[in-house]
Length: 457
Image (cartoon, rainbow, N blue to C red; front, side):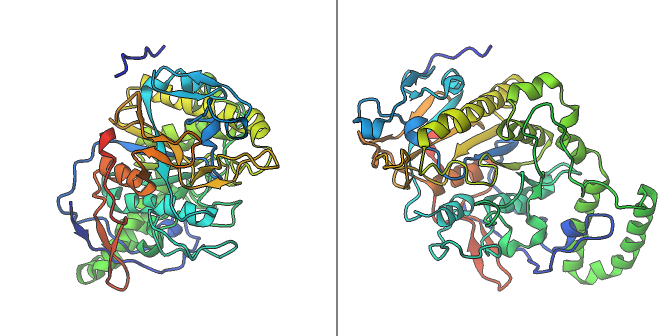
């Protein structure tokens, strides 16, 4: 049982990006090696404070009024039908649908005054959430599969791959890289090149007793043996040895090929991804849901050494977009598995001594409207919503910011979503001011001007 306590820059990094088409074949690692950027030759950087990040994305937009910012004194058309719970943080009340997280409020911080301005549709809001950059030209049903801006996960992969343990990818997504019912892909590597795309876990079981299928790419192709693959790799290295001396891009390609080879033939990645060997009691604790089993898989990956894991708790189907029947859906379908999954993740990390080393971020691209609509739902609201952050050495049991009586806008300390991403970069030892170089030789900031949320550090 966790006892609640008494409450209380600039560097450029040159890369050579590739536009090679990702192709399969061989032993299954060609798709991971088909790129040219290098993560070597780093100059001095900020101090890395944490092991990794678990980014829990509630795609579609969690209603802050039923979660972190209820308004019990507001009129019923704003307040809604649910009651509230006093949490273990005396400054924080939460919605009644989060009893487990209410008991753990001494472990995390809530920011009630987050804004994602100008991003009223999912495409633009998710783009800003995942990359930090505005892209107002994105409108449904625009094809954004070729989005040129790298997501934060891909930037982290590019910057931290050299320090990621061998046999592990530096950026993982659960279950895959797509959004909005698998019609968009806003968390790509963009101009960085295909080598910095996320590794996909594939479908996650919906029940704790169901088996998990480890991704097929983590293994040798038909008819291949480890000896044959090793001999081919040695021969390839001999062919490439002279070319690497005169062509740095060849050396960069070889670096990525090596990382891919280690992932495919090694045991570390396969072991971290394999839920089937997890004790039944642990899997059951996370719950019979994709949310729960996805959160467990994220914990295993970051514990193994993956620095950035994104879990789509909308299951790539925009589940939290509750324009209609908001209250029934939250009560019966969405909030119970989320409450169990996130609370168990925090307890698990705490019990393993990892909570100070791992930052857990739970957020949506925006919140929901103060006014309940005619369909008993809430619509998109970018002006003020709430997020939760835990671990990573940030303050615990803390409440930052507030909103007006009806929740229309921040009353104290507005926080732009770019400040959240800047905080993540800062804790990972990556300067939010970092510039990367695109294929045309232009310096590209990883974020617009933004600073970490100092009140949390």
